Image (spheres, rainbow, N blue to C red):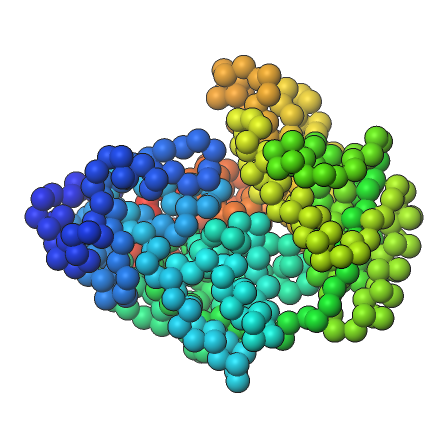
Length: 465
């Protein structure tokens, strides 16, 4: 694809649409838009614009489509797969001014929200009305709901409530040619042709730009219990995960944490936590609902399962403050690991009964290639975040040999019935591994879908395939 540079005349056209102050061209000002949270990668756009209406987005895309200018949509920049990196320069459209909660419809348990709303702000707004939006990634305090839609995000409570795909009813989207459409209907059922809403979820900005989101809401649970279970080994902790579900219990969250990750959180965030000798891994288990007796019964049954898997100790959080501290231990783990070392993060997902084999295999691969790994994640979904630590690896091995090790981890993941990403997306950094999972027939179907929506290939080029 032959892309064009942004000329002075095109830049003037951008300014005419959004105003001079919302167009950024200075190198220093562009720096914050040159990276997201993916490793240490930087790609500068030629220009950043900050529209605040679907019509402004449409005007920008029409110009770019006519002139073959690559466009990178960007939310909060918290992504971990390089999806918001403008690798071909061009125009970066920042959605930060789309920050309104338009309506919370208590009668129909729905909400309409713009994509630049911070996820936690939206969650808190609906919680004030006794409702729950349960999609809560670790970065919920900073990520945008539009980015969550684009990456098919999840979070700890997916295990009980489902991924973001269960909660998006309808999307307003600006197509690459500037047309504005709604993808579906504000209904719980949809059997009217192809489901374009589901197609846009997880499409990583390659098909168009989302400008409004209609979400489903549910009544909020009124009480919960939180347990922290410790184990001697990763395999014992991971083995207990599937057993909890086989016992007929569905926790509202079930998170895995490796000891090294907890140690780094304690160092980075100065959290006071009594980390006992001999503990190698933890499960953080939450049960919620509306009946305290039912919740306590579930906790007792979980405890019985944990004992069968050689659980060393179970800590029950007695207060809200203690619950908050335990959740902080898990939610800050990614930031803490990143602060300690050069690293790469993979987002593996397997059927949850395969977790012990997965984590054992990851450690075996690391031993052969000479890298350390710190693993944590949404064990209840079989979703394991693998943080590969450079440590003492030479620059040569890190830049060349490591890729073969990552490939082996993905091959193992696929052999266990899993896939490349559970919630971070493919973006830039995982696209070379797509052929491990998908045949050329499958990939060509995806490319064909892209071609229908974006025949000139301007939308977030260089991502997914």
